[in-house]
Amino acid sequence: MSLAVYIAVMAGVTYLIRMIPFTFFRKKIKSRFFRSFLYYIPYAVLSAMTIPAIFYTTHNMWTAAAGTAVALLLAFFEMPLIVVALAASGAAFLLSLFM
Figure 1 (cartoon, helix red, strand yellow):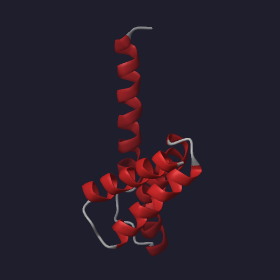
Figure 2 (cartoon, helix red, strand yellow):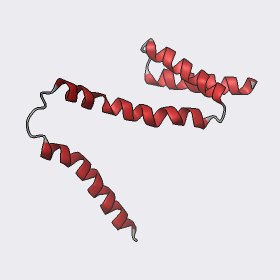
Figure 3 (cartoon, rainbow, N blue to C red):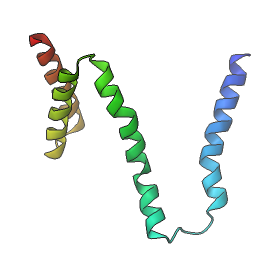
Figure 4 (cartoon, rainbow, N blue to C red):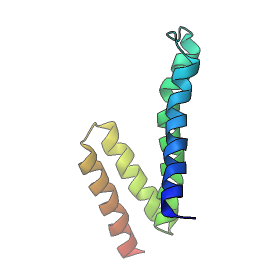
């Protein structure tokens, strides 16, 4: 198959995923439970993709745990994303030097 077919299929699937909710839900969703459910889906999906990647990247559970702990601590104190990312990476790197 050609690259153009792959791109067309990918564009179609992406369009359908975004178009289907607008087709079915024409009125404002009033259910508090359903609105809350939809609100937290992006966070759940992002967590489901990120957490396994954290622990499989370093090939060492202790360095991954150290980086995660530093990231959670800095995020709790509302530090900027770049600070959190660099500090977590640095913590994992420094711990890997001593292990």
